[in-house]
Image (cartoon, rainbow, N blue to C red; front, side, top):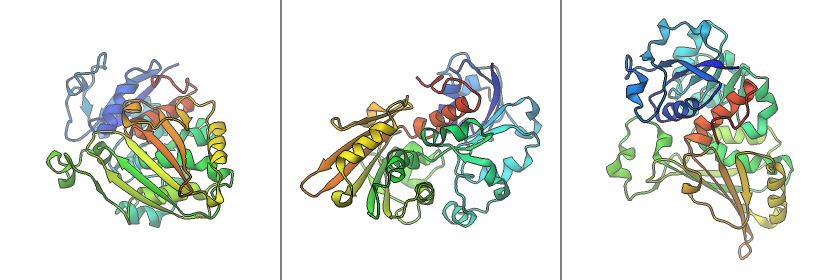
Length: 337
């Protein structure tokens, strides 16, 4: 069995990463790619590093025949898909949206944190949150997937099993996350220029980062009744995320944390749990893996959970392909190993 897919936003960092993995997938036919700045360009010229790409051009979606498409991937900037594209698609194609447009259940929160009006919120209930290892069974029977954000993936994979097992309790904790610059996309911002970021490092979005309500929303679904501080930072590297979570050990046992995570992810292809090795970004870059390490600082009774992934792969395109594989009955690791 093979499926026909198309990609909106193929020339962005996430779209290009998605294309790389789809191009290796034995069950996928890429029949459409859409963009504005690269309209009319053959994708073989745009991506000379990829072999065996189909001989198609980046086209205008308004002139495309979507009745031939089984699955639409959207890698567009936040706000664009829900506002300009989704309402105009006449055919009932399956959709995996890699933006934040259908992640947030509360319309007011979406418009506050994403700073734009939601024009398709009536369709929000159709979308399943695509955190693969947590919502696998629901994803299998779903037609519309909202892919998680990169920071939330790095946070929720280690925390949801703990919340489900009621070991966090009422314990405020700190989430300290650091990301490569590709997580900000290709939109030109002064702070992301090489001259500003090289040999530099800084925090941002302390009070209004768009991933805060996403993290809180998903934890609340499993009975979370505590609070956290989320501080993101920008690293002078292209890709990769390291999230450190600091939890007071007074109300939680170190061995409990380690055992719960080991048990929850023992049969997973892409999640590994360790309590001996401190991983590096280079261990996960360009892979769909997420590495979790658990340590305890006995001197100040703090449990430290380290979570590392590639923001463009497990934090975006790779997880999207995992979800596609589940939706269409392919092997979950197809094209990702």
